[in-house]
Length: 275
Image (cartoon, rainbow, N blue to C red; front, side):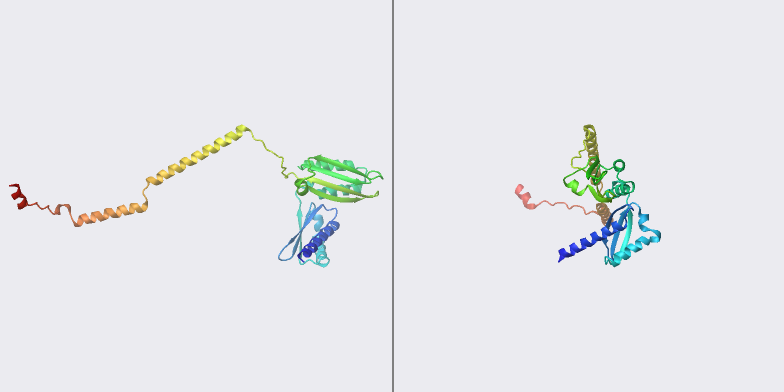
């Protein structure tokens, strides 16, 4: 039963994302995210041109919220629009740019369009990019064109989880043409990236660390000696009390009224024995 709930929920999310992608075409849409909140469901739309999505006085947002309530049965849907900082690293926006330019100018200029996109993406700081266009382009016979720049992983964990992918289709007079874009972002850390440091820098760093440790140890030793040389406060108080007590006793029993020692009388028995 729980598995069915997960499946239905994921299907619902997929249908919502597909509907938003169809309705908000040619506005630089990247992706949408659904987040559950205590008050309802929050739909975050990431796009490069958020002004076109909002519309005049938020008319498009109001229409979208009504569709989400009536068609998809969402409770209190809240739509937010987030702007993407770096447009040239998002594969969905790049694929949309290629598709829109091919639909506008035709198939004769597709190579110039793709090379321009490659230079823009690499200039934005991407590690690598690959664009694959397949279909009846530029002639009536179907072909596959591959364009690439930089370094791009094709297999392994990095290719599956860190390389961004997008697939779109362009409807032309000759037929449907598929466009696939793969981009490896600049913040991806490869396992074979090794940084080599100079020996002199390493030695200097080690010497500085050793000097700092020695200074710390000397400071701690000096602090211990000072602490041992100082008499504790409670001991000072006790010694002060003892002095006061001695002075008080001397006042009660002065030194000149001391009892004189008794003279020892000779024993008669010991004198007789001596005689």
